[in-house]
Amino acid sequence: MLAWLTTGRAILRSLRIYYGDKSRNKKMDAIYARFLKAGDLAFDVGSHVGDRAGSFLRLGAKVVAVEPQPALGTVLKLFYGRNPSFHLVRAAVGAREGEIELKLNTRNPTVATASDDFIKSADAAPGWEGQEWDDRIQVPMTTLDALIARYGKPAFVKIDVEGFEDEVLAGLSQPLDALSLEFTTIQRGVALTAIKRLAAMAPYRFNAALGESQEFAHPEPLSAEAIGRWIAELPMDANSGDVYASLNDAALRG
Image (cartoon, rainbow, N blue to C red; front, side):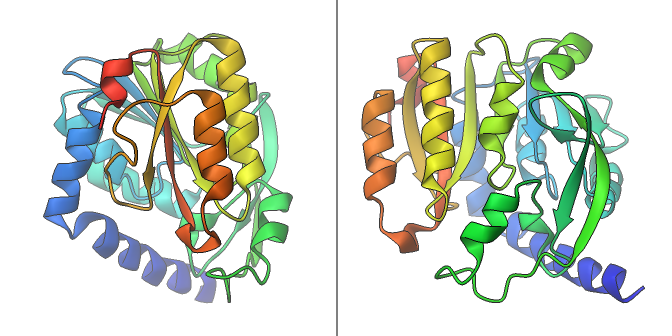
């Protein structure tokens, strides 16, 4: 009961952060409108409280939100469950189908992870003080390929899974038009490996947005090598952001 109360308070805090700033929501809609139009399909992998799913829906897209945390799945159903364009998949996403252990941070559900290396990297890192992954649950795991087989090929995929991004891409066997993946300065190698994987799959170009800025950091799209160097040179206190990959250069121009 205490854990559920702690998680409930943390979710309320996330709702205030991710839904309380209307100007942020406008910026978010503007950046995703580069990749999505009405009627398109979008995957929100690691949906959390669904602010990105909400943006995709506002743009008229059909949304598959993938979220393994039971409490967050309940929030997503309450917010969007009656929308016929919204589908919830209660699972993690990785390189294979099956089950996986999810490490929960009951005081900060935003950073639940399937990656032991992510937790080790966060230990005592600047900006991550006091984070504790204090619970474990087994959850179903699916793949991007399996989701595509079930729902269709998406126009855009957002991936935010706390150090498991490359594992998610390992379950994808075909190029997609556009996608984003979170990076952190405590685990730059995960993002760099994921970028290399994408570059080997198709002639992707890249841009990035720091933190929750919802604004591209570069006026023109970059190569895989250039975006990799930029991530490698970021100061530690940059903390996190999202890399955007697209087969359409115009969508990535700042």
